[in-house]
Length: 314
Image 1 (cartoon, one colour):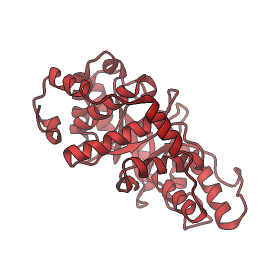
Image 2: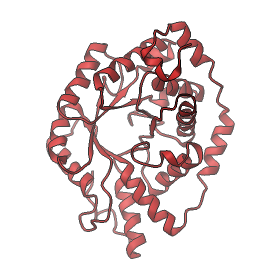
Image 3: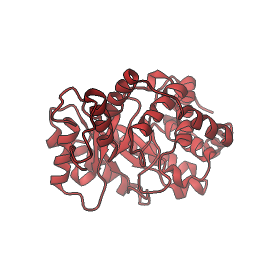
Image 4: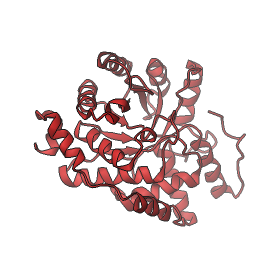
């Protein structure tokens, strides 16, 4: 077995890859769910809550991935990403705006000079079912138009059929196309069935060169869950211990409230550690979460809720 830190560059046989992934320790399902539930009950006091809210805002990938998306909607979303609350300049900007590849150019122009990244879903999102050539072309277009991050989705059919080599080689090829552009690999954990598969898919993506591993497209239920994210956080923690390379984590889909976001921040701190508590290494994929964070922040600073109609709808 080659050095894990150079796995993607080595000549690894399908048998070696399968043997490594199948040899990973099994996930204790009951233990993972109990630990996630226990951490979700942690109490956060006012000063810590204010810090957590601002940190969560800075980690948001503000997302619109609908067939009805328009350039105008994307421009409005970008304005909100750069200045979430125009009446309060102390609110941090979000990490990135995530759009389909054909709207990347619109987002890049709208966010020029703001420091907010532009992420684009690619590789036949959300199914992952397309020839590799089409996936690479989709990735190339997004990067040519200025995307700073690519969110690719794996072929779950190939993974579940045990064709780990195909999934591995596709991630390697997309990462090569990305170059210095960050690659987030979407596992679509709601379709992986077991926590063992989530662990295997996490390691497979990291071995192939992923910069981030991401739970979901947001198009499949269940999307992000605390136990699944716990398993992924354990994977990135253990991967860094083995290879020295740090990989980020992004839960996405179904994270709608400040309480939800804080539960994830606690989970990160207690599982992977504080090194992951930055937008560089942890993101929250969401469309409706930001408004609730802003309402809770307003309540902490003024004692009065701003109300859902005070902030723009996304």
